[in-house]
Image 1 (cartoon, rainbow, N blue to C red):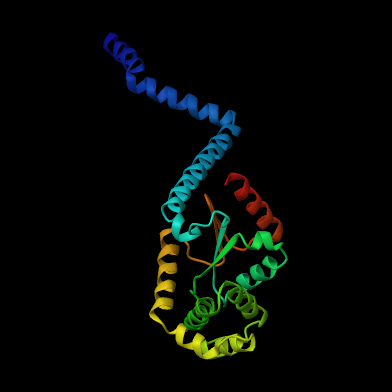
Image 2 (image 1 turned 90 degrees about the vertical axis):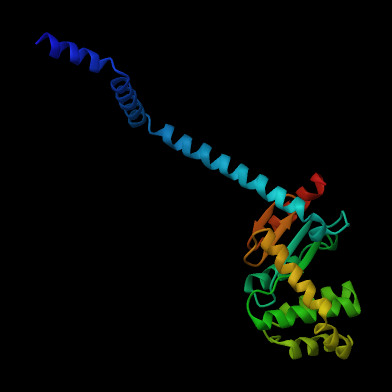
Length: 228
């Protein structure tokens, strides 16, 4: 009998028993204070978001020259596809902003919705290479304003011609190695940043997935300007 009592005393005072008792008290504390779990989850989510933001900043910094070039006025980059409905809405909203804001947004062709997207992107880049940046922006918005009537190389070149640009020169440039290389660079740049969809906006230290409304664009551009 004395041996049994002694064994029970030893077991109760053992590290294993103490650990079981501690676990039980923790469980009781959680059950009695469930808000502690919510606070812990919120803190974990905040820490994960902060870590993800730091990763984004490092990724953007590594390719900043490819994104923004050497122009300090460029504060936001949009990856877009001409056959993307949300990109069309984004283009429409972009035109409502003051020129001093849209001038600080760089557009990057990221054709991911099939061969037609790639064909239009090639002509778009060709317009810029042949006729300059102002012509490029005019063509860019004209494609979206055409509401789907531009769906291949031929129709894109016709649109450029209707705007008064050299159709023959643009058609030749669209098939050039330089244009193909630019699209490939854009695709690799998107992959580096983990971009898989359009539209996607990239600021100097943050990536914004999906379409942004005018108010969000203004807020982001103002914030980027202050930080720069």
